[in-house]
Length: 105
Length: 411
Image (cartoon, rainbow over all chains, first blue to last red; front, side, top):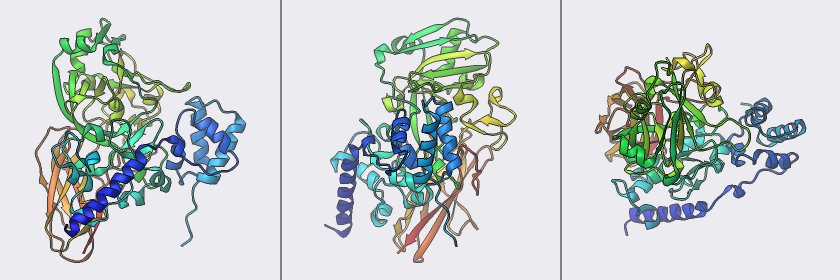
């Protein structure tokens, strides 16, 4: 076996195992950081969509941006959230998935 | 091996296809997800971490952006084929995915813009109207949104929220003319069988009459000679070649020809670009003072192979493979620069598969000096447009067509 074939085979097995390992994944595999507000996030947000939407949209949204997103879910998409739910969810998203401040040069 | 690579379809060796060529072998094939390191640098960190490879039933492993609704991106390595295999074609839904048996499917046509209502079954539609095929790129409006800097909220797509296919079906024009279009007809509103979970707006989109009556606009049942996968809109979807995929309504069940601008959320509020930022929309009845609906695909190109970050062998001649496409004027030429944009040379365009299809191109390189090497590629369209050097930032993250810079390492 040439070196290239060896590399090729090694890569193939990695691709294969990676595919198999992930082929059975579903949204129950999503893990969000523990913290106050997580219960409300799970109850409200996952009514309509998997929680990877939160991971995917981080960490670049500041509190105002998360607030805008959550308000859109309530006002446009019809999420049945109380004002307290909104406050808790926005605080949670900002704390754990909010914008990371740029490091000083 | 056979599990991934030995399957049907396509016109090239799946093994080569998945593994990439020299680039993938020497470049340490970027795992997991066959996502290039260049994309990983540009996407939000959370999108990289959650963007695992995952296979929906009937699909190959694709880059999962969200499980529910299912939003799955095609890895760029699949774009080595002229037409994207159905089981590798990206998936994008706003809501749950309808599952409609062909025998149960009905298409209803009504509204003030038609003389008489119509209802068709699959059989009656196919029997009554001529079957035609159109090769066309289907590209999500938000393709490459994840590469926006600064980032904007939404599905954080990399390069793969698109694909090229041959779409087969009947002309929307023939069906509308059968119902009789009135003089007051303004827009054709398409609705799919999908519905929102709660009280949110149903995903409904309209087309201006000129686009609806374009002979290339179809009600398609087939994709690359096979029935549409349910993930891509079975039993039937609209095909609006040259326009972004938001108009290509999946699981289409209802057409309403209106005499007023349709004002649903997904037309009036979403899928909008600032007025004038990207030229005329061609959809005047939906233009406002502030903004326009996103419509035609902007000229773009993509380096497919070798993948960004690949290690290239010094002194060895290889061919770079890429694709270029636009909203239907066609590709005039593609240029490549190896000196940071100072000088450009034409790539070799491959076969023209139709003005709405993407065009493959090749460019031979023989890297001499060891170390970093950057390749730039930019397309020019027949309508005179070219790609932008700097991102035209807009709130929804649309039309990212910045000239690509691909970094390689020569050793």
